[in-house]
Amino acid sequence: MNPSSTRSDKLRELKNYLLFLKDYGYTEIPQQVELQLGASKKADKKTSSSSTQNNPALLQAVQEELGDCTRCKLSEGRNKIVFGSGNPNADLVFVGEGPGKDEDEQGFPFVGRAGKKLTEIIEKGMGLNREQDTYICNIVKCRPPGNRDPEADEISACKPFLLKQLEAIKPKVIVALGKPASSTLLGRNVPITKERGTWHEFEGIKLMLTFHPSYLIRFYTVENRKAVHEDMKKVLEVLRK
Image (cartoon, rainbow, N blue to C red; front, side, top):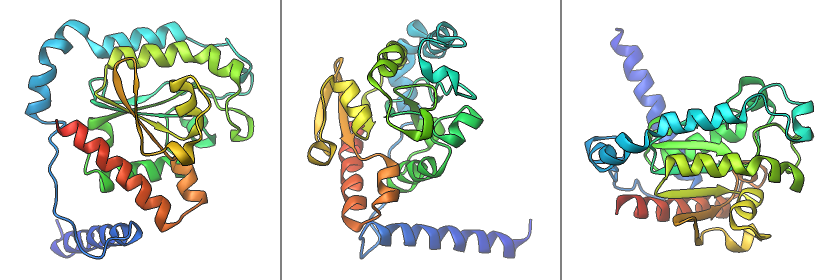
C-alpha cells in the first residue's frame, strides 16, 4: 500500500468530517461518543429473542407475501419493488414515504441524494453504521409518479406490509422521516414542522418524528440541520439505555 495515498485518504476524511461539523453549527470538535450497537452488547441482548423470532426469516416471509405486488395503482409504473434494507435485528428503524427514481431503478431504499444525506446523518452525525446498526424502509414499496406523496389508497394497500416489517424487527426506536411517514404511523395528520423532535409511541415502540432528508436538501439551513441533529441526539440517548 502506498503510504502517501493512505495519508491523503485520511486527510480527505478529516476534511469532510470538519465540513460536516461546520454545517451543523459546531465551533469546536465534540468528544466522540461510542455506541456499541453492533458489538457484543447488542448480540447478548438479542440472542434469546433472535433465536426464537428469527427476524431475517420473518422479514423474508413478509417479502414473499408481498410478492410481485399489484395491490394498488403504483405497481403500474414501477420498475422494482423497494422492500427495505439493513440489519433485521436493528434497534433503530428509519421509515420514509416512498422510493424515488434511483430507488426504483436499484430496488433499495434511500440510495439517491436523500439517501446520501440520510447515510451522512447516520454515520457522521450519529456515529453508527447504516447497514449494521439500522434498518430502512418506506410506507409504500413502489415509486409514486413524479415523487409525489403517496395517496391514501396506496398507503392503505401497503401499510400492512410495513406493520409486519416493524413487527418482525421489533426495534427499540423508529424514526419517521417527514410528514407522510409520521402521519401514517400515528394515524393522523401530522404538522411535521411543529411536531418534529417530539417522542410518540407506535405499538409499544418509541417513535421520533423528524424532517425527511430531502427536506434538508431543499431547505438547507443551519437551523434545519441543527434541528435534525438534536432529534438524532435524543434517539441516541434512548438507544444507549
